[in-house]
Each structure stands twice: as structure tokens, then as C-alpha cells.
Length: 358
Image (cartoon, rainbow, N blue to C red; front, side, top):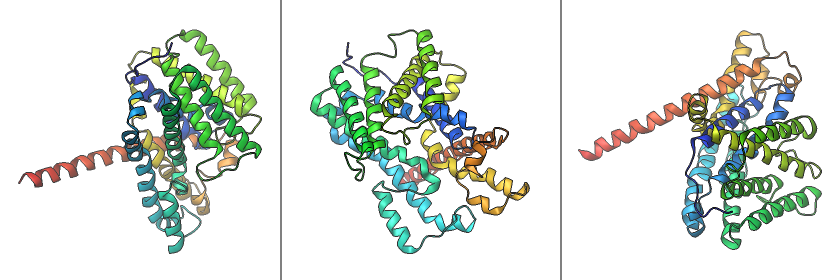
């Protein structure tokens, strides 16, 4: 039975976002490969599914309002921070954080691509998510406007996106600009989130069987698929979609039933910093790298290692626990910067308001 109204936002989804953003930072920290494989099974698809879950049906009749909102929340942060980091690139290179300097022509070229969301800086590598989410959101909205949001229509949309992705991976369709496999996979997950919400699939089953199913899917994904949303092949695409969707759905069911206290409140707070963690965590991790270079006799050339020192080697060395420090600093510093930004903005607005009232 399809729902006619959109559910009110639940703290559980912010908490789930908090969990997923923590897992994303761990995935970039040089953590053991087995842990990273487990995380990659679902953490980025879960973000797209949550976004689809929160889609408001009112936007179907307010296309331009929807586009304005997405440009403000997705396009503008991508462009703004890409340009900031781009102008700081040669400064960072002088500090040893990059191994190359940009010429004025390269800065202009990369700036144009940044405005088009076609390229960003290495320290902003996670912003590909904003591009894919913008594509998925707009594509899904246009699909809903044309075909509606009945259950069969949503299922057909998911199948269509996966079919296009499969054709791209097999070489039957070219990748042109935003028309690529990752973006269509993102759209399939987005529509899946809408389907879960409209059909109340997060409330129709008990948490116990969902936990069992989610754990089984996580085990399969970790030890068999060994894939991520940007690494799927034509062979693993469908199994990956099923695995990631099942795990994400299971987590929504579980988080929906947990009391909104303690760890859920904590994760929800972290979830509210998702964008800033995405923007700053790679730069914050450089603090740990600098400490290792300055005090632990690491070669200064490793300052430019990305995202951490000897990334692929340490993933294969379970005895290397620096990933814990990278994770903690990446999260903590990003949140501190976000809070500082918020307080600075309030201070400036207050000063401007005081000046206007005189």
C-alpha cells in the first residue's frame, strides 16, 4: 500500500547518516582491508537511499523550488569549496601536502570544471557524492513527474537505472559528462529509498529478522563481492545493489526502532555535520601525517601521500593502528571547523544586524 503523504523526518535517519559518515572516514583512514570491504558494501548507497527516503512529494509540482534547493545545498558547496581549495593548491603544495604546483592556466581550467561539478581538488575527493546526489535527485524527480510514484513505476525506475548502468559497464552505452555508471547506480539507490518510504517497508517487519538478513547480506558483501559503488563490474552490479539495499534497509528498520537517547542522539549530532566532514576530513587527516613526519622519523615526502601515509600498504598490515588516529582527527577537527564556521557566521550576521539598526 503506497503512502499518500511523506513521513516526518526522524532522528533515526540523522543517526544513520552519522554512522555512515564515520564509516566513510574509517574507509579513508588506511583501516584493515577486511573492515574497509565491509564498510564499502553499503555506506555510500545508504546515503542515497536516505535521501530518496526523505524525498517530499510536494516537489513534483514545484520543480524550480526543488532545483533551487538542490543548487543551494549541493551545487553551491561543491563549487565554493572547490574554488577555495583550488586557490590554496599551490600554498598546500609549498607545505608538501601536494606533489605538484598548478600554472595559472591549470587553475582557470580546473575552476571551470569545478563550476560544472566535473572536477574537484584531491583533498575534496569525497565531493563526487554531491555530484552524484544532484544527478540522482533531479533524475528521480523528473521520472516521478512523468510517470508517477506507484510501486510498479518505482520498481521499473530502479530496474531501468540498473539496466543503463549495466549497458555502460558492458560498453553498449558511452559515458558522457554526467551520464555515467556511478550516477545511475546512485539514482537506483535514491529511488529505492523512495520505495522504502512510500511502502512503509521500514515499519512492516520486525527488527529481529531484519538484523539477521542485514548481517547475512553484510557477510556476503564483505567476503564475496569485495566491491564498492565505484568499483562494481557488469558481473557484480546486481548482487551489489541487492546487498547494499538490503543492508541499508535493515539499518533503517533497526535505527527506526531504537530509542532516541544515548548513542542515537550522539550519532544524530555527528550526522548533522555530514557535509563539513565530507569537506574537511582529508585535510584534517594531514595533521596526523605531519605529526608522523615531524616526530616519528617518517620521510617528509610522505606528506603528499593520499589520503594517509602508504595507504595501500597499511591496509594490508593489521598491526598498523594509525587508522584510528586518522579517523579520530578527521572527524574531530572537521566538526570543530564546522562549529567555528557556524559561530563566525552568527557573529557576522549579528554585527551586520547591529549596523543596520543604527
